[in-house]
Image (tube, rainbow, N blue to C red; front, side, top):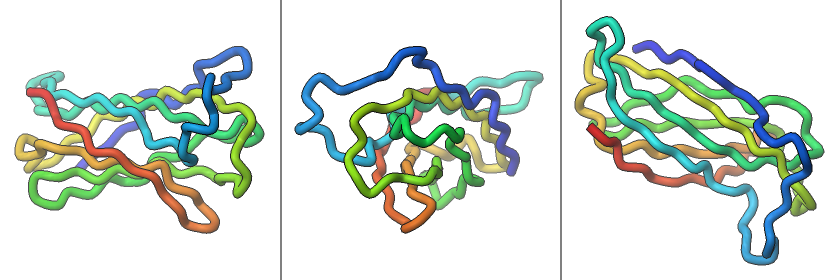
Length: 130
């Protein structure tokens, strides 16, 4: 099993706020897309994530080592989440390449935005495109 973080970048240059913050549940679940490709003949799962993180936290989120359970890949993005609802967020783009002996069996990804302390998470399930 190998995973490589290709990019982990804040993509907004101005403060980002949701138009109707009262309808948003924090932490905001990651927005994920995933598809297979074969660089140099090696089947690889390309995962792209958009994360909304409290703008008061200047640190990049970290990507924890993914785990496979049958046809499911679990992926955690961790950061230090504030207990208070943020007034604004930074938008992060994270791109990961994942490969393993059984990567071709993966049909779903469950991804979580996980708080480092205390441990709280918010997740989403994404189908993998062939």
